Image 1: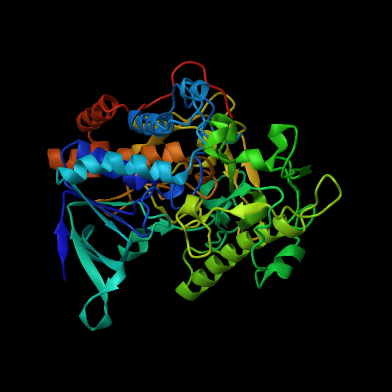
Image 2: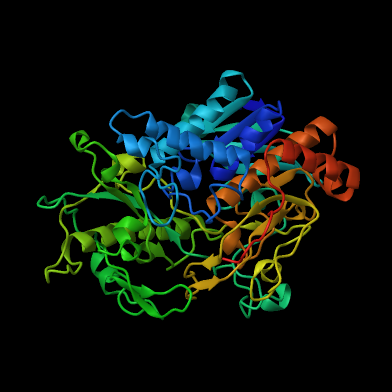
Length: 529
């Protein structure tokens, strides 16, 4: 069996995984980074989700590496000769001018930037990337992970068996989208909703339910070519999805009336509208044709990640493989059904039905087999049982009217409302105001296992607080701090738990973070979102 040894093994190449690998390599460590899909970058790339960010992102509230990533994305657009001069001169260029983000951009551009950043370390021999590999087994001794076995998803060993690779390292970062290393390594963890009796959270469930997980979404990209017909074949399950009306929904799921996430009152969200704030087309638009020379032929492209294709009929995490596969296939079928409905039956302002000129753009999202994104957008994963778990009472503006909990062991910051999408247990939206928050080091430390760190949404948060810790800048910060911690521990020959327990080590580690551009606290006046 082939194998690799590195100072740090990062299993999972999403937003947090890439940040962890970059941070550890920048500090001189050797890193093996694995990724299940063909595209590293997670939410940015294979899941095809433009970054959800807080309103202060241009000036504060993220790491220096994340800011460099954002500016590199803009630089790639500015390098294109057919971008209008006024767009090129815009210091805060938003390539899609989508209303959800100040940097709506194409997944392939994010991928190119990440490969540029990681490529420098690859060429120097510090980073090795294993794409299309997933973890299938772990070797654990006492409270330490010794090795992780990865299965290659392309190619087989002699005799037809799946090829496997053994990765050894003194420190592992679990940056898989679903926290896959946690059960493989026997790490104490939580899945789904905790009970209110356990967390004391005002919005926690009455009883713990591992199957109560936020919806996943299979995203896709479309452009609009009026006068043309690009209608896709009718999906087999189209009629069932067209007629489906979820409990608490104001109408059919495939419709332009949806619950307001904060009030659950019905609101209209048309595809095209004169008022941009209410246009689904502009909501996650990733290419704004108005920024380009008309001779270029560039058209608007929008990314469909809407309430209508949130899949909450069943979970894809922590269930038997056949059930997860069925639910993932159904999630893909829902997205195709939404597209077919938009093309054929969606009501138009002129009294007609359907927009057959909507053209699927598989090239934008990685050319998956059905034209959809390579991977589902995952909002919630398994989460470690941590030395310090962040609960609703730490960050909710209703629970803490004077400000958020302050963490002396902070390793970063984030900001977002507590935003939970409908769940696989039948719960509707939960959307709660929250303060800009810190990321405590204690939330990166499992209660027992000594050398595995969470690198994305699998840190010590709850089902509720995961709703504000799950967004791109925060996931990047979690991964970057985990990678920095692993590298720091390699250099200092220390254990992660010792770094938090010893004041001198904690101060030294936080100084390393600050020097690398990690913001540990919010400065000046802050307000809840």
